[in-house]
Image 1 (cartoon, helix red, strand yellow):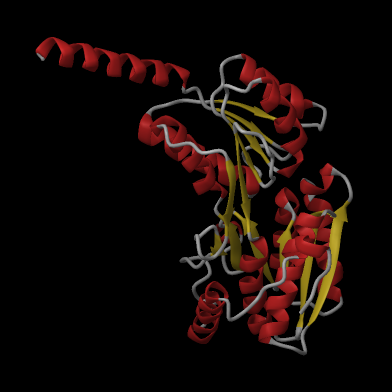
Image 2 (cartoon, rainbow, N blue to C red):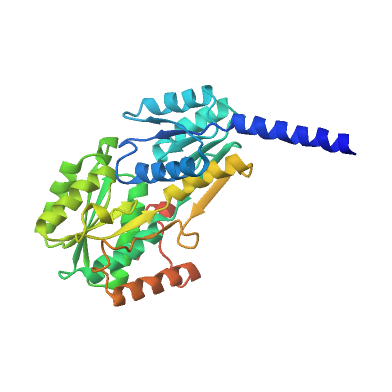
Length: 330
């Protein structure tokens, strides 16, 4: 019996060591890079948290043009990366192709669905979080005009816009929403000067709160809001700290938690391919309240948004998803 136990223990230890040797996280950040103060940086924060807790380092690459995506993901897999994380919807085709070439490697992608047996896809109900910050914008507005500035004009960003407009109208049916997209190419995610120009145009037309769902471009929107003495709303990461007193709130999308959980699941052997959809119920989206914006959020505003959150989770409020039919319904 003792010999059997020793042999069994040795086998278990061997499997454990082999598993640890196979665990080599690799991350491909998208346009804007690790420190875009938004989407990519949220992922970076989650990966760094995992690194600090476990001592496990990771390889990474920052995409600067579209042609690099597939090559970067393939090189990560070729060099033993496992899991390989593709960050952003635009990496979908690359992850799909490379995951097919490396069936024994685990892949994950955030913000897109890839149907492969070795891929975990994590997407979010951005429209639900956007609805809540839309309510806050409407309640904070003194002009009954608020704005939205998106990055690249794609259905995903229209999803943010549509959820936001629904929240605005829910809180103030008479409110007007001014909307602009920054551009139609990936450069729209990292153009602060253009973001500032669009924000100034909306402020000149009467808007006094603007929600920017535009990656690094949003930094220009926030600066314009500060210069004009108006309010802005951040996106993806908690951006309240960027312009304290100007940032009404941020629509947080917990990409940090998503990235952290992928690494944790692979390390612990609980990784499951398939699709995860994270909304208000799963704490995958929400809004940020902290020391930087607490003076801007009245108790009545917080109470109203907290109630709406519960009603959305309970199904009492149905927030239309633009991605379901490429339309925005109120």
